[in-house]
Length: 560
Image (cartoon, rainbow, N blue to C red; front, top):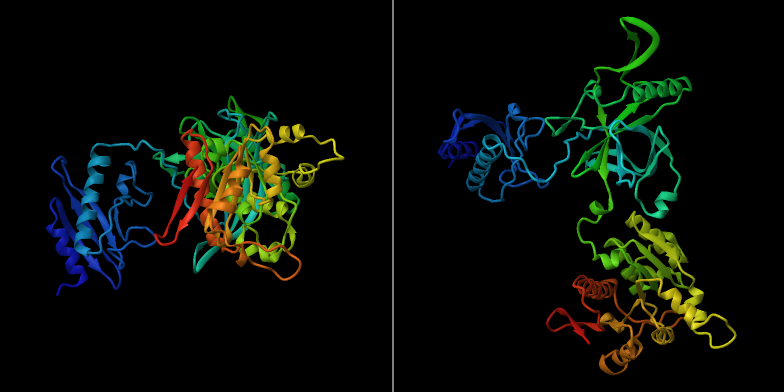
């Protein structure tokens, strides 16, 4: 029976257009060199190869076979170390998998080496993620409404948002995450990142510098530069002098730390991307040199860059289009102004889903507080203790999405004034005007009296009522108008809603329906999926019921 090395050696030798030059094996890895010559090639290409002991299986979604040629860096899909980036299908048989991988390498040669094809989609520069004194620094930014001009430079205001661990399980590094708040140029132009209101209003905690370049700081248009002197044509002399002056002040005052330098450039139809070079106070790669005019010293000194390696931070574009590039609801919901009345089990799950699916403007109304027993069925957290539901959920939503603007409505309007029959000047027309400011109003309060009153108003908004039966076997979604009659008819005459088996907590509390978080969430998600799909198709919403067909193991939507 052939050993692993012999099996690989025979497979390579049997492959057309491939010549095995040498092969070796240690305890774990098979290495060697091979050459490939296709019919359209005048001379062969040589590749070193390495086959890990896990082959033919991938590890962390990475191929366990590697082909290298450091002379091919100018071609697409070649890493800085000469690794040829190929993606192939999986196969548990070593011989068949090796045939697939060699065929993929041939396909790379034909597509990128011979035909010199370029991919249509943009590929970011390859940036090494090396910790600086055991710490990784990340910088998250969005686009700005005010455009940048080539050569523009100035200050960056940052906010420290979180520290954590990032790296291998047994070799983790401390990661320090920053949010980019705004860029302030030397001409005092302010360019704010397009975060939600709460992130914009929080104060900056740190700062740095920036420069907008007409070209990216790259080699072969794919790799980020590795030496400071390679930035000489990108960084303006005025900025270098300012950085040099800043470091002198910091050193003199015995301050330490790291100053980030953002270098921006245009990609994809003027979209801007940023890379961040890290400068350690006391070790800036700068030196002063005298200024000459007509071979005579002017008495001034300018800053020059030294031959020194660059430590790059981790920069990520978190603009709305990237953040919600997958799974976003339709624009009617995401751009609409939404009011949610009642944020218990159903309402909190609904609200959190809307935030995760890209909705930007949500107003919350609820008079209730969150108790510990609310946590298991809704979107609240035990660690926050006993709090008002509206305040806790607002905080949770802002942690999920940096683009959702949350406001807290006046619950008195919905729980008192809407029901007042006498002694108030707050008329139905005023309540109607308030509700009509919204594009969507979701009533998740299960307050039958409120539902009756809302259904009697002259509304232009899309009013949606969501309520759930005991044991969460059905969810009833009523759509204005006539939703009061529809909802009550479903619960009273159509659905088998067993109210004799409600959950009765200890103490003087009203009984509530039974059902787990899984049960409730399943129903709410199905209802939202139907609502979003209907709105996406520009169809009119009709009342419906989500019903669990237990015998069939499926959910069914019954429209009315």
